[in-house]
Image (cartoon, each protein chain N blue to C red):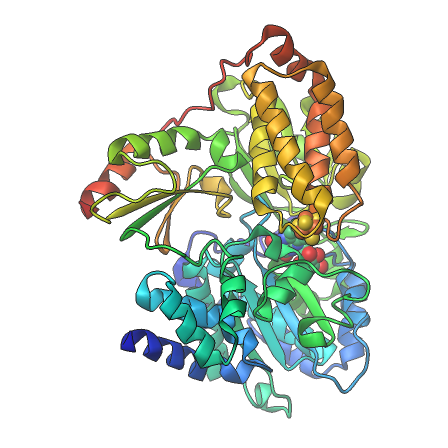
Length: 156
Length: 431
Ligand SMILES: Cc1cc2nc3c(=O)[nH]c(=O)nc-3n(C[C@H](O)[C@H](O)[C@H](O)COP(=O)(O)O)c2cc1C
Ligand code: SF4
């Protein structure tokens, strides 16, 4: 938790000069806190609220709006498969089934060992190289079955 | 047609993103030096004369937008819309990855024109790597004193910061984006009174421009209005990035002048429809644009006015191509699901209508639909269109209404056969 507070403080220090009020630091600070902790449990949101002098319900209300702020833990390797139109046209439904079968989980679930989370997401903005999977911070474009095999093996 | 690579010269070359390359090979920041010798009005006039139109979706004239900023003592803000959330769009990402300094230079010039001293780049949260590239380029611009307390040694303070979104399509809509920037839920604001030019970020005058719009500025200022207008045609000027995805042999990013023939792009540049199949339909401007059939596309040119005349829109120039094996009801489900999932929920027609549209299309795909459902879909779309706070309503209604209208026979086939005539299977994964 100390680490999380440090990450929050560092982000505030770095960014506050750009904004006319503290409220505007909420998204940057939530990102920093999540990066440090992995997701946003109640305690972390409370820390964020205190650090920015905002009411906790306000922080929760904002957090709940955005899909990238995790309200429960996600696996070490978060597979986010796009299933919007461009990826769908290039077979993303098969991509999702392939991963479901390999990992034995459905979209929205995490493997028991906590290694993998599978999420079906909307357009990732990389449609020229569909199908696309975002894994944590990186995009994997024009993915093939052997790409997926390699990614999963590397983690297991 | 006169053509030149302006935005995509370094496509696929991350090492080209550095400041040195821009300075040595692309007359980098020469436009800024020129702009510093001009008045703000002079810069705005030049952009007006260039007929540059916004490249985020609506095609609003950029110079005109800058001219709306009132002369007050309040702070003014420039906000870069790097949300790139319209399905099918992947052009701003390429600019940020490979030519970030062109966008930064455009931003600085724009800030001078509207008297802004802070530039916020609102980038979608998923673009973690793009944000990193951009932050590095901004740092370089600070070191070279294009940003900071004295822009190029002049008495003008200018800061620029990257602000990451967190996964919400609606934050591409400019007033939702401003709420999100302010640390709020990304819910669109009611216009009036919240026109960004007057009541924008933090209640102050604000210009919101798309990444590609801003990246077009240095060329206009440096090479001149005539040079810019030598590409494209009247009211549709300049070079343009087109994002082609779906069933073509070579999907990807293509830079062409406005007015480029649609079929030439598909057949020649993109190598035609894959697997020897035929073109069936296209979303020409992202999933929010009405679908066009192969027949309708024959003589269409790629610009704002021609696509509007054809009954659709250029939007974010995201061209999604569907071959003749595609089930349009399945496409409607994918489309409806997206709008159902991404509605911010403030307006009843959008929130409730989106769910109905999804349910009806799902029922039709399963073979359990009724003929009345087709009119019901059109009716729900009519009841959303024009009756919501933001244009997300139209973005939902237009594609879904156009799909039933133009592919009614295919919907009817689902009903008559009691099943999906395409076997109910989604397109397969080739790789
Ligand atoms: C639902 C919706 C989503 C939008 N998404 C984006 C987007 O991702 N990127 C963008 O630049 N503009 C988007 N826009 C358009 C913006 O509201 C705004 O018009 C644009 O950023 C203005 O910049 P421009 O004049 O340079 O085009 C969206 C609009 C709507 C209604
Ligand atoms: S139209 Fe939809 S997205 Fe836009 S404000 Fe209303 S509910 Fe929100």
